[in-house]
Image (cartoon, rainbow, N blue to C red; front, side):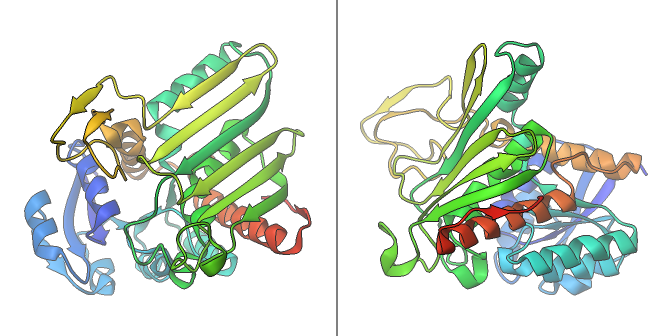
Length: 348
């Protein structure tokens, strides 16, 4: 196999930045896209020849090697199951599913079918975080002690992310799943205790009263080694998406800024088209992203997934279907803890 032929399911936000990454990889080609709308615009922008509205039709095609799942969270399960039934390799965006039961069924069925399920945690490939790991491995901060990490912004543009029945939760499920997945990878071990706190959803939310999931959530994770991590996701942070990681060690610390670390500082009176994701305005001082998709890890992540298919190799710890399942289990344990006020113990 010289090139991986991709069937894209979805045509909006995630499907767009996935296509941007594939366009940089000569070993990847989107041969068809299935979605219920935006097909003409998407196919024209990315040069995709075939379009359809039924993802099941796409999964049955002989000229597709890999299904890329870029649809709202509640649809992940059905698309992955259909792709696996047709023995296609799969990339699934985060979170893997909206329930533990669905996520576990997906992981088990994919194993039975003998295909790869690759979980889309892009932070694991973010250049700044990879450099931080290199420094840690050099002994720059001594023994790692604990980590704080967050993904926050002022609210999702997607109506599906705003409703718990479609998202599986609120900002913890939709945003904090990134730092949770990254910290598992960073420590290279499982979490064994979870304490969670959330704003509550609906009228209990701080700001987004129309969101049925929480607009603020956080969890404290204890890992097998006894180390802790504090992970946050919220929809109440204005000024653009803010992704940060703080890593504390016996001999030093690392502060990593994934979203506001642009080498460009711009001052504009009239404003301009785009600075970073979720900015309300580009007037006055901003830090316009230079290559947002690469800096957040998407380009190298998807290149890695394509290589896994070409070389017939299993994905590494952190981006397997099992890791997506673990992240869903941790988020749901955090919700249980927030509701009961008790620590939830397990092995995720």
